[in-house]
Each structure stands twice: as C-alpha cells, then as structure tokens.
Length: 441
Image (cartoon, rainbow, N blue to C red; front, side, top):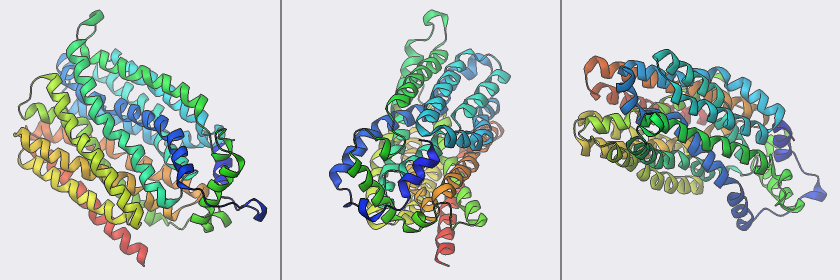
C-alpha cells in the first residue's frame, strides 16, 4: 500500500455495517508501544546526524583550519539540499509507501553521514553536508503525516511531542557520546576523534533503516498486530475527528497567506533549535569549559530540561486543545532564554541557564506547532502543506548557522548572534498570535 492509499484508508468514510466502537486507551497504548520506539530511535539518529558536527567542530575546525564562517556555511548548506529535494522525496514517498521510502532515506543518509569522516577541505565539507541534506529530505514531514494515519487530533500533540522528544534525547546522549568518542578514540587506527564521531554516528542509521523496512506498517490496515475490528476502530476515530476530511479528502482550508505565515513561524522556531544544536558546545567552551567530555556533559543539560517541559506542556495542550497558546508561550520562553545567553555569554552559568530555558521553550513549541496546519489541512493537501512548511522552515538551518558564524567572526563573541536568536523567537511568538487572530476572522 502506498502513502496515498494509506491516507485514504485512514480517513475515508466507513460503511455503516463496518462502524465500530471508538478505540480505547488500551488499544492506543499498544499502538504507541508498537510504533513509537522505532520512530524515536530514527529521530534520535536524524537529529544526531545533523548536529554532531557541532561537537566535531571543536577538533575539526582547528585541524582543518576552518573559520567560524566556513563552519557556519557548511553546517547550514545541509538545509539547501534538504529544501531542494524535499518535494521530490515526498512524491517518491507517495509512490513507494512510507515504510520503504523512509527506510531508503535512513540508509542513504547513514552512508552520507559516515562519509563526513573523509572531509579534508571546505569544498568537501560543503559537498558532504549538501548530500546529507539531500539524503534526509522527506523524513520528518513523512513521519508527521504518518502519525495522522493513527492518532486523532486530541492525541496527536502528545505523539508529535513524544516523537520530537527524541531530538532532546539526541541532544543529551549525542553530546555525551560525541565528547567521549573525541576524547577516547582520537588517534585510534590513525584517525582523529572527530572522524570517528561521524563514523559511529552514521553506521547505526543504516541498521535502523533496514529494521524499519521490515517492521513498520504503512497504515492500521497493514498492521498484523491489529485485528480487522481494531483497525476499523482506529479509522473510525480519525473520521469522527475530521468528518470534513472524510467527505473531501483532498481539500484544505488554508490559503497561501496562511501557508506563508505558518512557514515563517516554523522558520523562526527552527532558528533557535539549530542555533543551540550547532553552536552550544562552542558557547560552553567560550564560557570557560575546556575538557571535551565535560563540554559534552554540560551541553546535554538543556536538552534534559526540555524533555520534562515539552511532555508536560503537550499533555496540557492536548487536554485543553490549546496548542496555539503553548506554541506562542514556548517561543516567548525561548526568547527569554536566548536573551540571558546574550547578556552573559562569558559566564558558564548564564549560558547553561539561558540554554535550558530556550531549549525547553523551543522544543515545547515545535511539536505542538504541527497541530496548527494539520487542523486546517486534510488528505493530499496535508501531505503537500506539511512538506511545504517543513522545507521552507528548514531553510532556517542554512541562514541561521551561517549568520551566527558570520556575526561571531565580526564581533569576536556571541552576544549579537544569540541576541538575533532572541529576536527570532520573539517574532515567532508574535506571528503565532497573528495566526490566531487570522483564524478567528
């Protein structure tokens, strides 16, 4: 079954003789335990393979003679490849199905990630990052859409947040692992520690991609561990949740202006996420920490804080269906954290406290953000809208790191760079409120 067929199967009206009682908590718990562990591992690897370059930079930049601007451009060009190949990747996902295409994405990006160990020059660094972005294109919007095949809106905020908790987990264990690898494998088999960092990060992704090909069902009707009645109950819950989608599965109610506004909010939120992902280890070192293992541990603290905050907020947001307020509030919280980092970027305490606040705010807002477009889009419009918002928003990953590095080179510290992140988060909060007012009208 391809992705379009799965989507139609998820929301198409059921004939009266097949309608069943709504699925209970026990059934949803079983679905969560069957799907989410594998998706969580995949997202951990996705985020780790994007940002482990942040820790690798501590050795790589010095050994290869890369400036802050060269590093920032290389870190960001990932998202140019991601942007250019997002739509083609989603079209292929429609053709081949989520399970097979997500597996292909993971296997190729694992190879591209490990290939970073071969980087020698700025040109080869740029090429490797571009190819990595091209390989990973389509993964995240595919998973966001995939969750809509299983969970109605009043459960989806928690599921998207649980999925994106893997980003925080990657921030915790990725920084710790990268720090340990670079400190303990430096020189092993004549390779520098930062090269081992990329190799160890890329190979597990290939294995998980193969596992997804074998185990991940395309839709409830394909899950061997669900009975026919249970699969129909899941479909029934989706139809009841969005009856308009059941009648007109290709029609959305979001205009171009709405799409542009949502893409802008997502762009500004991601500026904060990638600012932390690519630059936090550098900021921690600049604030006085010098040991690689200690930097990895200290850089993990903000992500540990975020895991608690984002999941608590997601439960409350789903319970009250107040996703928009938590998106705006999370963005405002992130702005406060980045402002603290800007004010005290030479103090380790200021950096870690500010990073913890900004990380918690950003990772609270980002997963709940996806309830905004999916509440207004259905069917093929959802597939196209999610892909468009994600691809445009992720251009922030190019412009943000490059601007951060250029400003850091120009002003010789991170004050202006982190102040820019504070402004971005503030603008995200204001645009979210503008979206609320526009939706009311």
